[in-house]
Amino acid sequence: MIDVPLSPEERSTLLRLARRSIELTLSGRSLSRLILSDFSAPLREQGASFVTLTERGELRGCIGALEAYQPLVQDVCEHAVAAATEDYRFSPVQPFELGHLKIEISRLTPPVPLKYTSPEDLVTRLHPLEDGVVLKDMGRRATFLPQVWEKIPDPGTFLNHLCQKMGAPADLWRTKPIQVLIYQVEEFAEE
Image (tube, rainbow, N blue to C red):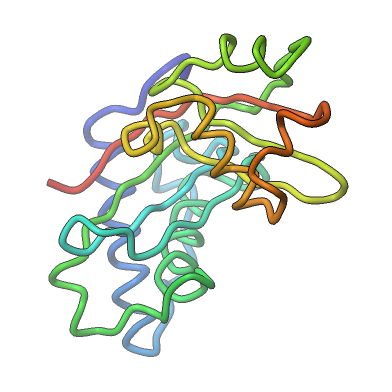
């Protein structure tokens, strides 16, 4: 779990900056360089995040990083723009959609390997609604945030969909050992 959650003010700052980054990008401008000393220590620390965009309750874009490599505030701004413009599953967000977009941010813990002995054991070791899951096999990788459990609550079906997202047969996890990592998130969204 996240050791120290962000304060309501820090969450609000990240949501505001994410929206501003998207608005500026869609108008052909870019967010001015962030002055890190303007932000609290948790926002300056290296952090990994995913930014999810929904429009009228439907997914509109989701991009992020599993590993922390830059300050959290920069990570969120970068992934907000990428979710709006680079998610290959969707056409880029258009300015007229901004009023209908809802932004959700997930701050990730570092992924840790999950040891298991069989497909049946793997299913019992997963914690629906708590664990984000990463599957890795033969140079391919895919993840589902813990929030995906709300739509796919059955662990076997969850793993099937995640294998397909990775570009593998749905039953790959049942037919051979693959690398599994889990992580947790601190999730917050615009009202």
